[in-house]
Image (tube, rainbow, N blue to C red):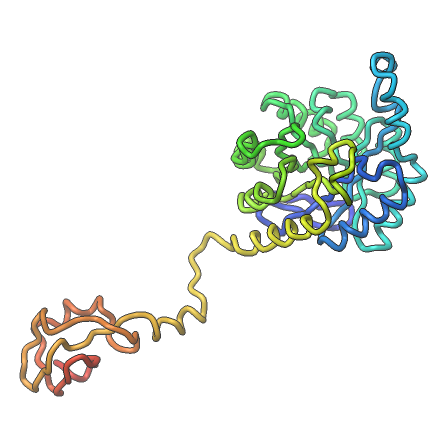
Length: 342
C-alpha cells in the first residue's frame, strides 16, 4: 500500500486511518475570530488538519478580471488573510493540537507555507496545467497534495511527471470533481481505484464537494488516504462554497463514520475470531439419531440428522458413519458420540 510521510511525521496511506482535512476556504469571511472558532470546531469534530486558502487580490485574479468584475476585488480584499494572520492561525492550530495548511496561489505564498513548516502544500486542481508553478512547489522538497478536479488523465500524468522531475516523490493525489456542490451521480468514486492503478506509488484521497457524508464514507471504504471536506459554522450565510460546506456537528458525524468504516474494512485475509470459535459450540450442528439405536444396529442414512449444539460430531462426518455398528445404545434426538459405534 502506498504511503507518504508528512512533515509532522504523520504517515498517510491507502486503507490506513483516513487523514481528514477541514477545508475552510473563505467561510471565515475574513474574520479572525470566526476563523479561530472554525479551528476549534474542526478539532472537536475529529479532523487532523484545518486548511485555509493563501490568496490575495493580487495573486487570485488579473486586472483584466477585476475590470470585468469591479465588485470582485472588494470581495477578495475583504475575505483574504494576510501572511501575518495566517501565521497566527497556524500557531493557534498547533496550540489546539490540530495541523494547519493552506493552498498557495503565488510563489511567495508557497515560501510562507514552507517557512512555517506546514505538514504539506495543497495544490489546487486549477494548477494541473501550470507546470512552472508545479515545479516551484516541487523543488521545495515537501509533501504535496495534488487535487485532480477538471483534469483528464493525460493532464494528471503530466502534472505528476513535472513534480517527479524535480526529485519530489512525496505526492498524494486527490480524486476531485470541481463542481460546488457536486451531485453523487457525477462523482465516479471508482476513479480512486483507477488513480491507484495508474499511480501505484502514491496514496490516493478524495476531495468531497457533495452534500452530506455518504460519498466520503464510501471513499473511505475504497481505501482513500485523505478525505477533504468543506467546513462552515453556518451554511445559511452567503459566502464562497458556504452552501455546500458542512456544519461542525455533521462534520463530526462524517469523521466518526469514516474512521469506523476504515476499521470495519479490516484485512483481506480470512480470519476466524476467538469469539467466533466459541460460537461454534452454540450455533453449529452435530449429528443426532433420528430414532432409538440399539446395540448391534447398523447405522443407515435415514438414522442420522444434524441439530444444535455444535459440541458433537460435525455433520460432514455423516457419510462416514453409514454402515457402522452401534456399541452403545443411543436415544432418539440425542447426539451420537465417537464411542457409540465401531
